[in-house]
Length: 291
Image (cartoon, rainbow, N blue to C red):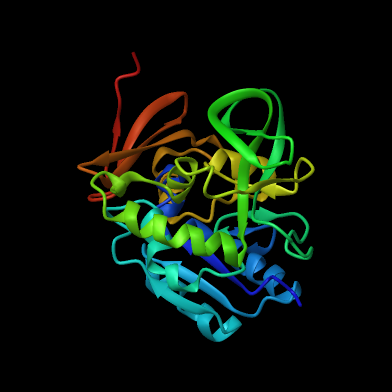
């Protein structure tokens, strides 16, 4: 009997670092090499025999609705996505945690990572040769995660999806419920909670070859993987900037989001060897002191 009972795809967040594309649509709905990110992941899950798929949505939730009919997935809304981190998304679907894949909607897998039959809970990993700022894992003699540090060198780091066995889920849920009620949990990723309970929540490192799991934290990273974005950003905002500043889209670079009281306000960018700020509210472009 397969242990792969269901999958949960976390798709509620802002992805603010992906400005301005994420201001126009959720990052999970971007097209990468001819496929919508989340659609590719759903197809891979279905190909691996997983029919019970739940999407947790929040930001621009209405843009995900078409997936219900197209793939017969279930959609759960995280109403707290704007004020809490992804721990709240896990809480919203805690009753669905069994033998379950936990996925991020914006991951791109170059091959289908869901086809194997996992026997134990795991977190996926790739190897960083040299220094890295990723979450680096240590393992004990049996391959279980024994510690995690932010940043390291020549280490296996956390990237991509995780798999919960039913036994793992039964131990995870009460800790999740207790943690969620605590002050300060608003900023927590579910991984933060997991790291505080490594001894109770035994999980192995699932080691993947380099390049299988792709995460895009910025438009420049996406451009490196899908060269078509260098010429066509698919962003009406960047096209407008290109027109107004008389530059090519490829010349708009070094994009950094700007927030005001936690809300997306705009972004700073470079073009024509100058620095500018773009405002979402009034579409204003103003020069920024380049000192």
